[in-house]
Each structure stands twice: as C-alpha cells, then as structure tokens.
Length: 199
Image 1 (spheres, rainbow, N blue to C red):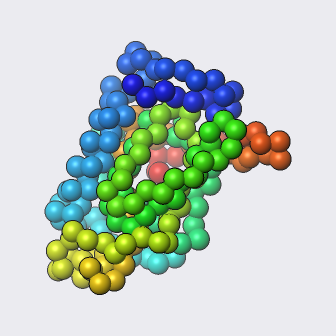
Image 2: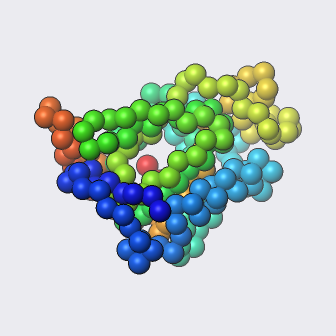
C-alpha cells in the first residue's frame, strides 16, 4: 500500500482499504491506464480523437466512465501548466502514451521534479499536490500504425507527435484544490473548484 502525504500538515499516514474512498487501489488504476494506452494505440477510441491536434491549447476526452472510475486521454502542449493542484477525494494514475511530461510534486518542504516519458506511469494518492506540464525533449511517438498516425496527426517515426497521456481517477473527480508555495516554503491553498474534468 502506498503511503500518502498530507502536504499542508506534513503528516504521513498509511491508508487501509477501509479508509480509501474507492474500491480501486493505485495498482488497479495503473493497470487501467496501461490498458487505456493499449486501447488508444489499437484504435479503439479513434472516434473520440480530434481530426487534428491543437498545438497551443491542451485537449482532453473522456474514454470511459462509471460510478467507480473516469478514464481520460489528455494532450499536453508547450507553455501550458495545470498549476499546483490536488484531486480532492479521488485517487489518480497516469500512463504516458507519447512524448514526455514534467511533474513538479510538493514533498512537504519543496517541489521535486520528475520526467515521465512514453510508457512511464505514476499514481497519485490522496493529498498528492502536483503540477504537470509538457516536456519538450521527448523522442518521436512510436507504436502507431502509419495510417492512424497520419489521419490523426499523432506523428510518425520521423517526426514528433503530441504529448499524450491516459489518466484514471477513482472515484471520478468532483473537485480540485489549487495551491501556491509561499516565500516561507509552505503550501497555501488558493482556491477549490468543483469539476468533473481533469486538470
């Protein structure tokens, strides 16, 4: 079981299945996002993909949804940030489909950076505060057939495509809180928004 960190109070706790807000565990969400990537690559969600990818604005579409889970495909563009946020009472996970992402995560004292490249996964326990961004130095997208890559402009082995990732939230998102790091290296909540869409 993954430890959670309450970033505001810096108190570490160890959740049990009775304390989690969902029957799905982080490992389940990682498996689901991995399968979601495979399904996107296999063309299962072609009908949900845009005819072309916006190079400036981020884009997302809900792939699956039920009472336990929301599954999303998200595109990431340069110079766009999600801002530091949590997922309120939802656990989360992602698998990077193409390109690379930069994640800044609040450790309780400062922001830690990690780079997630195509195939990498991450899970987000309760209390996880992070900012996710497009990361420019990513290899070209591989693994899509050429017809699919051309029709959806996902790139080919010779040219880079968009940064894409599949995200799972359980229970489905209902709210997100946003934060800033103060001059005293503390985390301060700036607002909370009701939402059923990912960052």
